[in-house]
Length: 453
Ligand SMILES: *Cc1c(COP(=O)(O)O)cnc(C)c1O
Image (cartoon, rainbow, N blue to C red; front, side, top):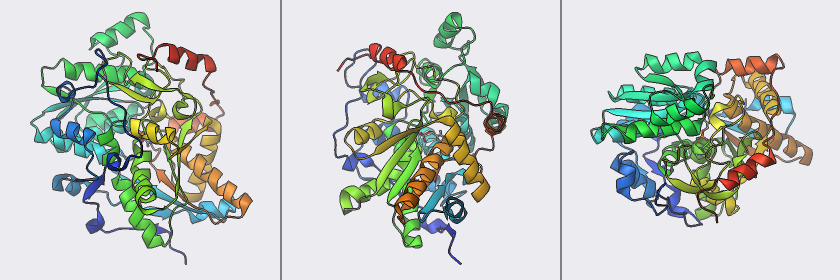
């Protein structure tokens, strides 16, 4: 009988995070202050983040120790299983070997606690008692609610209004852990009030929710700090436990990936699985391909310009160089809420621009079709975000079939879809449609960039 699950012991849990900054083949662009447009100082960032996370953000050390307190909590669900999708391979009739890393086994159902626990820990260690954040689909808010509760901190969550109404049980989950959840735009902030005055029925966006959470922290006179669930270097770094474990697990399987796949919103789960394998390419002569998958409705990497842009809609967050759909992008209401951010992690953008990573955009209907094929074969209903990675993995497997190749495919199953069944219901009752991002929107985004380069 061929082996299906590749499991590690608690003692195999990584002791360090991997920092891609140590091995970046291209130098990072500076992070700029939103008003002065000069490189930001640690003092500016310290209004929002604890000093240890700021140091991690700019560190070029290859490995950073994971604190024992964080590893202890990771042990509640890590190491996560790596699973060979034998049944999916059979359904597809492919000679490819398909593996997935199951991050949906975390308590809140996604990869997000890997950084939530770490961020809560460092804030607590510096005496912070309250955090603010935004959430789109609710996965990040859920993870940070759990983490804040474990460290005895309070949390305000600004949840994108469409998701707040589409996913009432995500909100209840956050409230169960003691978080306060608000439908953004709210009337609690200057920025939220200004949006509501212009557009009373605004569905909200991640960019707007980030602005609200940042405003609350920035005007709290140091009482509250802000926490971001993706995009920043330190967040991507905390996720590398995924890829470090997967490297050991592929060893157990006696194989090595030809291609590693992940969906991308801000880029954290993709970086989490890809960067440790990318290190092996850069330092040890491996040549794995890396595929970042996004929706055709929010095609940041595949269609956006590579330019300096604000991280949020209100222009309060720093300006970073990234592929972007424009900071005031309000995405179409596609169901993969976690993939609707206008920008992308700067390291992913730089690596993509330099040809180290591939990107692919997939339409919504084909994505759900793949998710259901996967669910029927493997018994796991993936989050709609994750389904984008599933689509690309199936396409790789079908391509390998056509070419008669025993291609080894690894994808990150970033989360389960148990809170996303409204999206599946809409798909199953033929109410979903594909959405192509229009050329005019890209032009509009270009015109609003803070810096023309
Ligand atoms: C948040 C989320 C994503 C997208 O965020 P990244 O930072 O790009 O990983 C993808 N999948 C799931 C399940 C999520 O919760």
